[in-house]
Length: 628
Image 1 (cartoon, rainbow, N blue to C red):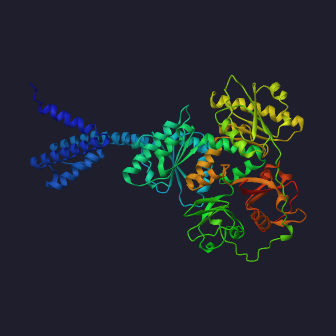
Image 2 (image 1 turned 120 degrees about the horizontal axis):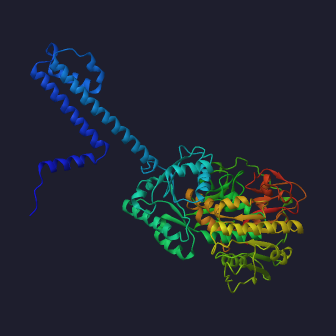
Image 3 (image 1 turned 180 degrees about the vertical axis):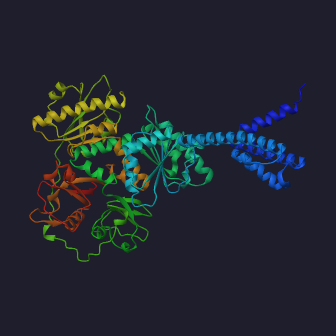
């Protein structure tokens, strides 16, 4: 038989419940207690008639309240013993109550400040960029977004990760000293928890960037975050724009299923492999990609211009002085890079252009463009010479690189693979159409082995990280040692060849800073740049996939004499016209005499002013967008 609760138990339970509500409950109780004391003592004074000069009840309430709030008031009281004793008791009660109130307010304020420092409050922003997760890529993305948002009003970058809010903010201030006019708001939480995501106001954001966590198997965590986001957007029927990074090809399909139309999924390893294959074969191409991917120069933008309706794609190429048209965004066929020169623009079509900013894509007011037709001259400059390549090191991306190389090389090309069998187990792809592969086991960080390879006989060198079996720092250290040996051997031999090396950590990449356009280090920094670009415009994902796909149009550096004679200075309008006659789009050039000068971007110029006169020599190159 159950025992009934006593009134004392019920009162104690109610009191405990009120007190457990925090500072608000305590303040309410103190307010109630103060009101009761003031009312009781005022009634006692009124009933006993001890008040001086027969004051009314409202005046007595006011007098009791003032003595409760200010203990010094009682020092000036005059009246009978009963009145003075009542006022003294009211004052003592006030000292206790207001001392407790000050303590409660101080404790509550400290708790609130501590809660704010923990980053648990909701983000109330509109048009902001959200980063979910934390890695070294955060700093590159934050820096690039600050440049991209420089012409916007009150831009905001919000970050959520399972780290201390203050620590995240301090690291960003340390590694990205200038965020320009972009505000950074950090929150502590689990991006895979829908409740925590709710605090980031995702559905009022411009874009969401999902970073891979630094662990051995990051993809499941990324997919969980995507699932949490899509579930919330389905409930509210408000789609979002998110960009996610997936490391393993095995998880790509699952990520695309979860993300649907709301997500642009980037396969990190595949992209790095394709970029390494292309930059290996073309000196200076790495600088072109760097220019297009970062916001510190010229980027790719979309522009709808009604005045272009009815014009051919070839005609649009010379209509912009300070922008380079490279393709079209059509309503029926989507993204088209380097389409047919005779393609006519429809009313809904937009141009795709390389420009300094989206507001610099302006039609030229120059109606008298001078084309130096006497300088236009086409030569059969195709180089069908087989190439010799050496690859040092191995990871799962290596097989993709080898396959990509076979798509770009001419028949008879060869590749020597050297890898440490203690760290990897190479599996070379079969049925390579243009490339034969030989394998040699050996420690690629051993100077004697490197010298025995006679690297001077090779045209290109690819240096890969042992990232499959070693942690990031150990793998990068081995790569760095090999890179230093190769540079030294090349200097002593006086041999010049293209060198592409892979560093996984951006900090290690900085240790092996670029010493020339041919000595390019592929790292996760490029992925950070790509994530930032696509977060600003999701259509850029299709463009970069096309650029890195051998089946579409790619960027090439071709001999200048394929397009013009080098006897006289020419303007870039002339180069653009000559390239268009070969169904190619000219977007820049490279001056060979500046190939070792970092102050002039190693001679690479992307999107030059078309009216400027340029004196080329036979060793210079034209940067074009072409199918082969």
